[in-house]
Image (cartoon, rainbow, N blue to C red; front, side):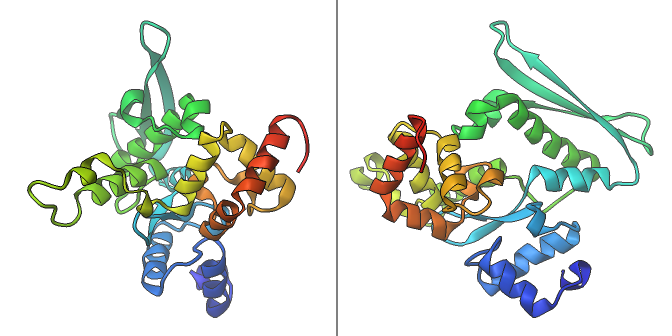
Length: 257
């Protein structure tokens, strides 16, 4: 990666571990750089980033910009079209992506359904059509050109949830408290921050504005969700919970931080 970006390897390693791949172990750094080099992705342009896994560790995730870069760089790519479908009540139902290829007589057509993809996050609640289009682009690109070993953020969140639920050897009859009491100790700092902000009646855009005004969130104007906030910054905001909520209230009421 250092050779490709024309920078000193040692400085690149230190920079990556202190910014976009913050707190990654050497083994995790290896996984991230293998993916970045395999698909010629630039982490500093947010084409690839580290997603915090529940219980610790990180997962390499390719952003929609990275997926789009991989797609349009294919020599046989000949364009893509999107078509939305609504249900009888006018609500978003599905999105179909059609990818045309120069070396095939028939295009690849993939449909993703809103009910299967939607997550209860700020982007999905505020921009459902854009988010479903992005999800469809990723799936269609994977089928058309065989991209493997990479996921988008929504896929990673789903896989991590499943792994967290099914990993380990559970007893045949777990104690009642394991069923009725959620284990919040495994939440990532970003997930805890999301819970605090949403439960207080604010949304991600308010937190984003706070980050832009105060400088407490790195590159706040380009951060697209709670999950993209750096872990250390999320922890710092949680420690200053009272001050944070007061600042969000001031922003919501039209004040300044």
